[in-house]
Amino acid sequence: MKKSVLLAVVILLAASLGLSACGSGTSEAAKGEGDAQAENTLRLALNQTEDHPSFIALDNFGDRLKERTGGAYDIDVYPNETLGAQQEALLLVNENVIDLAIVSGPQLENLNEDFKVFNLPKVFDDVEHQMRVVHDKAIVGELYASLEQDNNTTVLGGFTQGARSIYSAKGPVETPADMGGQKIRVQESDLFVQMIQAMGGSATPMAYGEVYTALQSGVLDGAENNEVSYFTQKHFEVAPYYSYTNHLVGLDYLIMNTGVLAEMTPEQRRIFDEEWANTYQEHTELWLAATKDAIDSATEAGATFVDIDPAPFTKALQPLIDNSLTTDTQRSVYKATREAAK
Ligand code: GCU
Picture 1 (tube, rainbow, N blue to C red):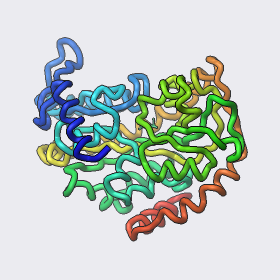
Picture 2 (picture 1 turned 90 degrees about the vertical axis):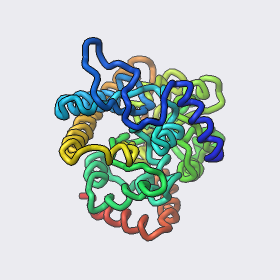
Picture 3 (picture 1 turned 30 degrees about the horizontal axis):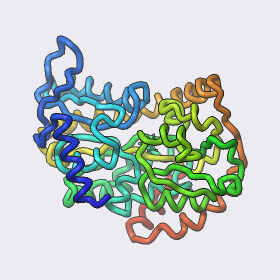
């Protein structure tokens, strides 16, 4: 969709949700009965369910923020794409219709191609390496500030998505040849389209919330994601074969409208930053338990998790990695990221 068309859609969506471009106004969604409203209730768009670690950690973030700022700031987390899918949520933050959103790496790659680095297969060895790099100001400082000028958006850091793997309705994918002819959903990015093609499949970009129905109706044969999304989105019901390709460790960014962030006093900002750091640490801890739980619960419900040899996929993806580093920033961030691996 063209940006102007998308923006019109977003403004209509915002109007239909009763949102106005007021920055940190008070929210309609009361948090709990009897709770005094915070002076500024920040609206945060999320596309996950309420039992997903991202919702839990962000909801706790709001509670701590409210307590430590003496009621000056709170966060209302809107789950399940209720404020729009990520493409729309990104524009709503840019336009100061909402304050915060969690968006996946590919969404930022569409605004500044330097973000591509963290979306590449194999750039992170594991969750620990990823979390260390994406919160290291020496590596990410300039990159995260790069959207402030033109998009009024500050990147604050991120949550892990864990390792992503392929799943299918058709049977276990064990080799790139098994992907032949399969329509696999990807996030909306050229890089991810190329990634699935390199892995042997045919890619269909689509918003997260549409994937279940598309798998159910046969529009898609499969998708790729982590076990937590596979379980919480119930994709295992319609694509019961999950194959451990582990092709990349995904990243979700917390983004915020730059102007709204600038309204905080230095003391409020210090508390906000401290509690955000506690939030992504809590998220990482919740993540490990949620992954195990997702595997156990999906298995019990009939899904099969298959260990495969990832080497043929890794080999097929190497040219994509080599050809994707085209700017100086991409090359230097990639180099620093790989040097930070243990
Ligand atoms: C994960 C990730 C989301 C992303 C989704 C997707 O669930 O955490 O931010 O939107 O994958 O595949 O679209």
